[in-house]
Length: 181
Ligand SMILES: O=P(O)(O)OC[C@H]1O[C@H](OP(=O)(O)OP(=O)(O)O)[C@H](O)[C@@H]1O
Ligand SMILES: Nc1nc2[nH]cnc2c(=O)[nH]1
Image 1: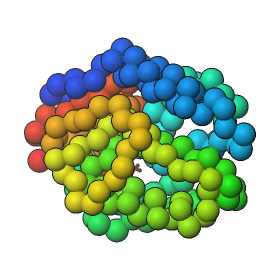
Image 2 (image 1 turned 90 degrees about the vertical axis):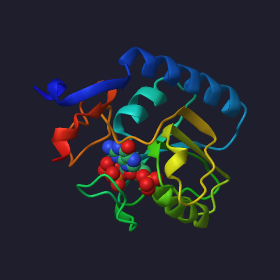
Image 3 (image 1 turned 60 degrees about the horizontal axis):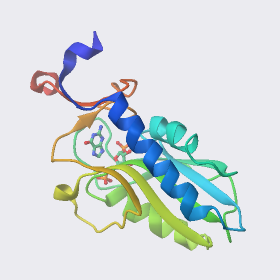
């Protein structure tokens, strides 16, 4: 069973949901008076679980859009090259963008995507990331809404994969070392 591959649980379902409710309340408060449309942009595939839970905690009429970006392949460190596999569906000029990401690790992916979003002339762009791993940062990324600062460990679950599996674990944890062998 998949659970048997886990060495330790780092964030339980309850811990994740409590933090997400807090982030949703904060975003609702910060955006409650804006006049322009608000777009929640999920960066797939890793953000899938966080996105669907977070948007349900935002009590405002937001629009959905998604990008698919990938740079890790099957390994545990970035290839350094960000591939955009799916672009935004909408013209976001003049709109408020809330970028929703699962993790900022080296910062490579978000540094690349932020430039890309800003070229599209939105009214504002803010970043909401469930996790941040500052000890691994190679490029600076400003995180407006951050769930947890995590230690330098490769995490799986709740959208985060190792070689494309473990995304469907309901919690975030660390794999047993023999899984990488
Ligand atoms: O800060 P970085 O070092 O760039 O790492 C962060 C990125 O890594 C993961 O994506 P990945 O490339 O694994 O694709 P995925 O979302 O499909 O899992 C994660 O979802 C972030 O987008
Ligand atoms: N699964 C997973 N993907 C990542 N991408 C960047 N950092 C991580 C991590 O710790 N785990």
